Each structure stands twice: as C-alpha cells, then as structure tokens.
Length: 125
Image (tube, rainbow, N blue to C red):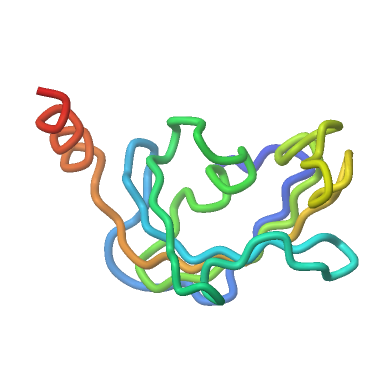
C-alpha cells in the first residue's frame, strides 16, 4: 500500500486472517486524540464499534487509508495531518482548525468487497 505523504501509519498488532481492501466493509473500534492528548472520540469507552466501507469516503481520509491492508485483530496508530482529517474547518468546540490527530484503530471484522456490495444491492431492492 502506498501511504500518502504526511500520513504516518504504525502497526501495533498485525492481526491474522483476511485483509481489508478497498470496498471491504469493516467494523472497528477507534480512539481519536488531539496531539495534546484530549480524546475526541472513543468507541471502545462507549462499547460502540462502528462500520464503514473503505473507499466510500464517509469517514476521514486518515481512517480510510489507515485501515487498508489491516487484518482481523490488528491494531494501528495513525498520525494524521489536517489534510487527511478535518482540515482548516475542524469541528467547532471539539477539534480545532488545522489539528493533527492521532487515531488508534482495532479491526474487529472484515467483509470482503463482493460480500458487502451484494448485501448493499439486496438492501436497496
């Protein structure tokens, strides 16, 4: 995988089994912190993992790039410059403009692209 310039991706635990690719529907736990350590989002603390399809651009680019090629049970630390997160807009009252973010992600499940796309097509009809 080619990592975009400025994005730092570090494997903490590699994991085993299937690999997340573009089009895979993944379920993850994610903790997002500001550089100074303030927690912005923590799905583990609330025990509310979330799902998204890699490449659909519904999550910040840092997260989509960061989970590519992860395996089940894998854990990563992603250091994201503003260009791959909330840019100069930030999130008022939560993330300041041009903030560097640190994400810690744990891969809980991976549905291959063909499976996740088939389920979406069935749900639409």
